[in-house]
Amino acid sequence: MKGLRVVAGACSAVLVVGGLMVAAGASAKAANSPVTQGFGTGSLAPTGVPSAATPPPAGRKVVGYFTEWGVYGRDYHVKNVHTSGSASKLTHILYAFGNVTDGRCAIGDAYAAYDKAYTAADSVDGVADTWGAGALRGNFGQLRRLKRMYPGLKVIWSFGGWTWSGGFGQAAANPTAFANSCYDLVEDPRWADVFDGIDVDWEYPNACGLTCDTSGRHGYRDLMHALRNRFGSGNLVTSAITADATPGGKIDAADYAGAAPYVNWFMPMTYDYFGAWAAQGPTAPHSPLTSYPGIPTAGFDASSTIARLKGLGIPSRKLLLGIGFYGRGWTGVTQSAPGGSATGPAPGTYEAGAEDYKVLKTRCPATGTVGGTAYARCGSEWWGYDTPGTIVGKMSYARGQGLGGAFFWELSGDTTNGELITAIRTGLAG
Image (cartoon, rainbow, N blue to C red):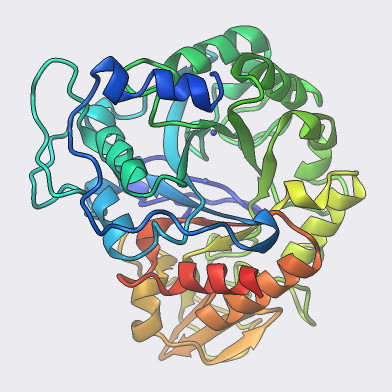
């Protein structure tokens, strides 16, 4: 989930706030594999482990974020992606986040990324990490093993997020230098086989987020162009983007249409439209698919976002629909229907006003739906979140719009048996 106050989609990249908002081709990746180059440890996939399932019909993508810091307070590890059944339903994992400092790509947390040692019991393949020369531990080592177990699965390294986007403006002043730094990091021979490309989560181009970006409307386009030139056609270049489709809003502040030829797909963050940063309400689900009578801000819904982006000429197949595996809520609420007043954010495990779906499904079960998503009132608390049923409906919309698939923030919010990712996969299949 996104940890700080946001408008129409944002990511968080720090542990304390709890969560949220990608080389050569395949043959070159194989040449850099640990088998041929001697990097890393761990066995090949155990016998009987299934390979990644075939993509949904029409090649639609199921893309999920794995957070670097989730191995700490959330106790969520690569092994959980396997044991939950999620790995067989994913087509791509977004590894969140790398940092952007001094206009360059940088490691976020080196210990979690490639140094933390896993025991056999905690490792995804049941083999303990070693400390020999060239050993790759941490999340990177575990992701390497996961990919061996699920050969069709791709991993994309995502840079930025809500708290780490401040360096993108400087990066846009020299896109080539930025792209070179990112390529050198993503394609570092210690883990080049782990990653299949790069993702940019810049919040937001040519707008004031953590800092005020002065790169101009074309700064984002130029950055994505440079990344495509450096990473080549054999790697994925993707981007999470704003969902603010209001007139003169953040979609208009950057040249997303101009960047479209350089990206494999965009991920408009069609969640976090509303939340308890408006502490007194009105209550509203954070991820409505469509507008509804009384919605606090016209245009803050996924269908308006998708229509706006398609209207710019961005192909439908290059747009993925965003799903939040969490809810946003208020306390001090007396009205069950949306639009009620509140006294502040509801308590959450990691962040006030936010909670994982896996908790909310039993703590505050859904009592109604509006705008294609669910809401719940339990006592004085009011929450909006997606359920398996509303997700299937959203996937029907995605199919009808010819979208390239769906993505979600983030894996640890789902149940231990992957209810929500199953709904995405089932819904995309039709």
